[in-house]
Image 1 (spheres, helix red, strand yellow):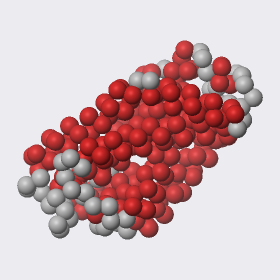
Image 2 (tube, rainbow, N blue to C red):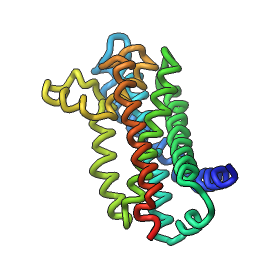
Image 3 (cartoon, one colour):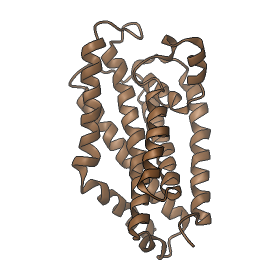
Length: 251
C-alpha cells in the first residue's frame, strides 16, 4: 500500500498548497449565493412548512459545492499531468490501477467534503440548521462525492486539452447541479419539468442530503439511495475499466 499512500498524499498536498483557491474560494462563492438568494427570497418563500428559505437553501449549496469540487480535483489533476507530461511519473512505478483509482478518488472526495464542511460551518452563522438524520447526511455526502470524483477521473482521462475540460464543466457539470433542486423544490415546477428532473441523478443526491437536515424532501431518502448507489457503482466500474485498459494514458 506504499504506492497508494504516496499518491494519495501527493494529491492531498497538491490542492492543499493552494487551499485559498481550491477550498476557500468555493466556500466564498457558495456564501455569496446564500447571501443574495436568502436576502431576496427568505421573507417571501417557504418551500416546506416551518423551514425558512435560507435553511432550505443551505443543504443544496453544501452538496453543490461537494460535487463540483470533487469533480474539479480529480479532473484537473489528471489533465494537468497529461498536458505537462508528468503523468509518466505516476504510470512508471509499479502501481496497480486499483491503487491509482483509489488515490485519485479519495483525494477528490476529501477536497469535495472539505469544501462542503466549510460551507456548512459558515452557513451556521446565517441560519439555524437542524441535523434530523446525520446518517443520511453522511451517506449521501460520501456516495455523491465519490460519483463526481469518478466523473472527474473519466473526464481527466478523456480530455486532451483544457478546452475539453471546460466544455464538460460548463455543459454537463454546471447544468446538472444547477437544475437539480439546489434553489427550489421540483414540486414548484410544471409537470413536464418535474418529470425531467426525476431523470437527473443529482436531484436525488441533493434531495436525500436535504432530508438529513429537515426530515422533509421531494422523494423518500430510500428512493434517492436506490438511485444514487447503482449510479455510483457504475461510475466506479467505468473509471476502473478506463484505468485498467490504459485508455489515453498508455501508448
